[in-house]
Length: 142
Image (tube, rainbow, N blue to C red; front, side, top):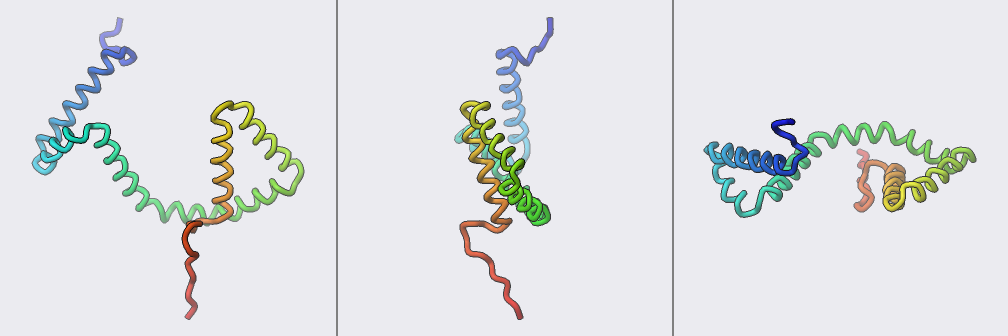
């Protein structure tokens, strides 16, 4: 018999409680972060983690967005060629329709949502890296 089993809901609840207590103690012991303890008590730990995750995502997206745009620009011509080929060449068009049928009918309930997301991704690949909802940036020639 194991002393601690994390599949047991009682031990899992105790582990989360212990982790919460350790987090609050760490925040309370740091002089600059001690003011977060009443904030945590007011909003709850789940909202605090959501806000911290949002902050991490915004920081990472700001740092990684130039890399993502560079990769997008390099891969865009091949994505466009593949899309055009899948529309015109019969075996590839057949495979495209077969994949649509498979996603719709074999995956069950999440199938249509998945196909819609894949279709949206294909449309975005055809648009390119600029946002589709704003005006196109004009390059001024001197």
